[in-house]
Image (cartoon, rainbow, N blue to C red):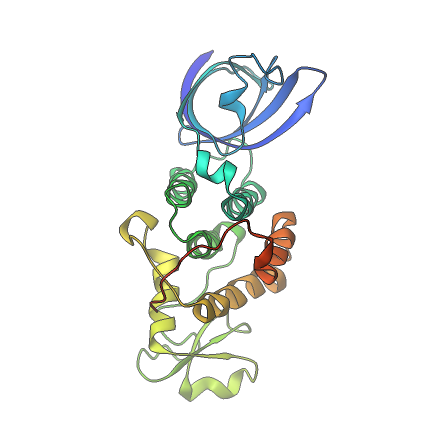
Length: 260
């Protein structure tokens, strides 16, 4: 059966001398893996539309086995992402998170839209580090973790001072701080920001600018959840950690405002 689906290339691998196996994230059928015959040849019509991060319209012949990619038309090549080292690093981490936490043919329009909005925002040169935090927080439930962020995870209180508890996987109020000696105290702006990352769509936020120390704290919390609660290792994060620790590796400095 021939289908026309919009999708985003999240993974490719060579197959033989001239073919590629391409994994797409689509709105209609979720994640799907297809064969792109001849796509490794520079003059192939499929060469451009099977590049990582490409957002396009694809004609796919889908039977019981692996689908066959017949044609493709790029909608957005995500050129900036592919040409900028920092953007590539964050985008690679985002697609790996989504790839690792989803199954083939598991339809989820929410995940597709999250990926699409995240890559488009990075491609438009919004703060890639902040955009990545949106994806990290929003993908927690997909990995089976549902942090309690409405109030205190122990007593339900919604007033007072709060911290984040990895034992409770959520906020603790000052009355319950004694339950977790390792909980991280949070300012009101941090609480609002975590809730924003977790619940608000990327397109509704606009150009969010954050202080470096704020992003560092947000990353520490969410990545500790991935490490300790989910036990998922991401290859792209290793390079990203190296890049964040050694910004001199970047070919140019980016002027970023401080806000929160």
